[in-house]
Image (cartoon, rainbow, N blue to C red; front, side, top):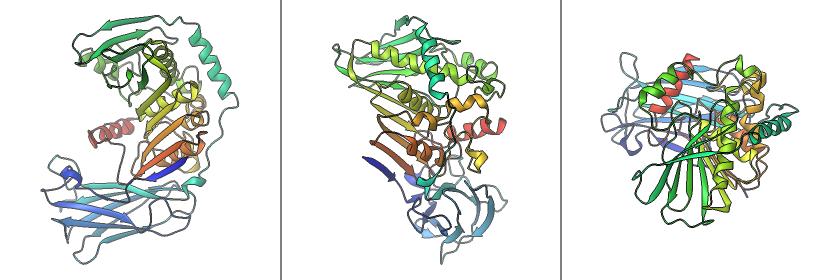
Length: 422
């Protein structure tokens, strides 16, 4: 069954007080219709209310910016009133998404801050007929290219080195894993197996990371074996300076080198996905795996890896991709929101997440935020439309950017800074 879930239609920025100002001031936001139910050309009314202890607050300046998949940018200001909310009116004449940012300003023009130092702001949006979005064509030899990469991988014997980490997590056997792989670096990961696990008794899950330079992390589950995969094949558990040096030198702005991206064989993501395929081969070789339940998951860059994994290995039974990266890489050429991603290059056409989506037949869950300016929702929607499985769900969250509940703004701000440097 296909499902499209609109998780939130109105959103209070003072949620769990994490974005409240002075413990009282908050911003509520809603649209006059379900946010993705508009038709092209419909007027979208974005209704904003500034509150103090739940009561309308007057005299505060709200600054807003509208962008969208039509290439139109508009900005404006409004002053909050005790009598009625601020209404921002916009529209889009074609299938696609509109994004709104709204900030509350201090008298000096700076953004009003919450006690945690983050701006009191809203990032969300709406969409017109998103199910009618049209994607770009893919290379004619897309499948042939990936068959060649699988052949490269098959030439490297899957030898694994395991180092047990004693007492890392009570109730689990934890291993630092290194597996030989095609490409520049090996697969490196952490493997977690529940104590007392019998052969062929548990599902397996392979987890992938968002953009950044680090090793794998230890992830556990009482009812499955878990392999947490580092994107780069780096040593695990090293001192911070080891990763920082790589981030500032060899791996600085990795994936954004236009010369590398001119050819699919030299694109940085080639090695990343070779390691993804090897990770699946390795976890399937484990005696604890039950032989039929194989889950892949990850956020952002990890979502890109999870989608590629499900496309390249038919043994995957469930894919969970949260705000997946590299969707609709040429969408900006059609006027759609670009987000934060490499420049268009011939080699990257073989790494577009939406193209991988066409090869996925397993159960798939996608998450996108209407305020996401790193992985725009139009790309994730195109991925959803391309999925070949009838068992697919996309959850669309209002008032959510590229952050996460555990660190909703800090990760997003880091990606923004990296985006601005590229």
